[in-house]
Length: 300
Image 1: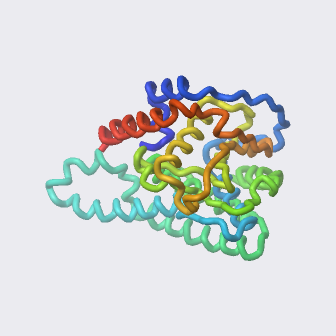
Image 2: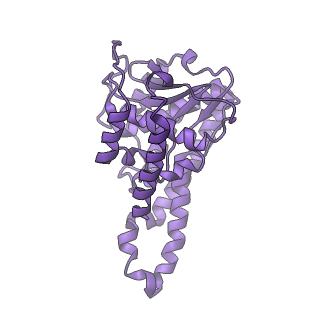
């Protein structure tokens, strides 16, 4: 389970709709970087990586957290250990229902380890030189493939190979980024988590925090503020109010929420005070905690 899954639950979704009025997105922007393949999810995750690489170069003091791909490797390590115990009759009847057999394949572990090692090398070189190249785009795509292991419990069928058009797509997307959107004055946190509150929903991490703003990246050809996008941002804000943001000093406050529409090179930001009802919000946060505890306990 995750925040994304939690806010899709019917009663949770309805509660968000009652409590928070979604603002209208009135602006129009040209589609500057149309997709070049139908690998929408993969390219979206890859661009999340690539943009964070870019932002780290832009903000050398930015706080970094472990990549999700690194967490995927840790998961594979734990599963390898668990598989050693399946020889015991206590576990043997259940292991196939608990673990996707693909995740126990030694080839998968070796390939993921190789991808992360390669990507670290390429990333560190970029941080030193600032030069974007096809190796960096490839690394971002490979890391996105690896993310699926942790996020969905599956192995990408193309693990280790990338489409040249996806590389071109990433090149187009990063070429239209406006650095002024992501140059921090004081605080920059990449792939932040929300203290113990992240585990309240079985895991939650957002894309970026720049100063007083939580920013989510959406790599979509449609410039629209969908209800699920809005709910996700509100969910992040609630988790921040519960557990803070790892890597951000507690005296700094989140005051704005934003979505970066990468294919339009447009950052849409709104003030928290315009969408939060001061009188009812504390009660909603308490309900959120209770409902998440119920749901997550049920999944354990």
